[in-house]
Length: 245
Image 1 (cartoon, helix red, strand yellow):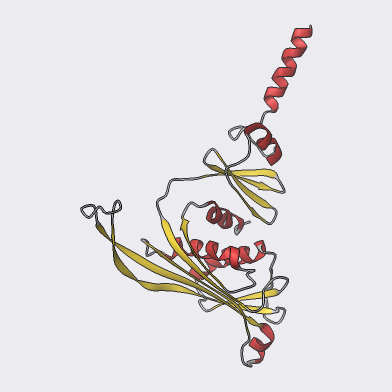
Image 2: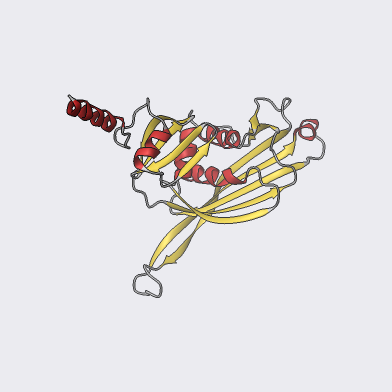
């Protein structure tokens, strides 16, 4: 009888073990960490947390498991440059988004930009009259150039020609009062993001541009940052998912 009870206890404890392949919506992040160790990386956006285990991204809301996002291999990289100019931070401000491009294409990107602001605890409002700052948005292509790429350092024989396309996203925020009155505009802050990569498709570039801007929305001093954004980066996938919630 004692051996039966012990076997049942072992069986029960084994069933309680939560692994990346067995996790379900009744589980939380603490159970997965206890059973499988700490994740490789995590990205937190408000109440959502995106963590990587076994090459997959596990989505949690308030630490409770929601779903798993499969990562597919990608070699699509974007060289990103972020220029931030700050006079008045949007922190704690009500912001109204006004795009210079009112079209169906922009409607695809607007939720992602709004999600970036919300993730930084910036309140986005629906009217200029209710806002403290008016955020203007402009984006597009700057052109392309041909560059020479070498397979390895000093390998002249392995060189090839590639076309590098440049795109931009410019965010400018103004004091809403002067914006509405038609007075001389008072610029509160500005972010300019440019990217260079192989694609000509703006639909692939915009998520990279908006994701690159995310950490600098609350910048309190002028800064210039260079980096590389991969199409399958945790930051980009997390923000894309978050913008749809």
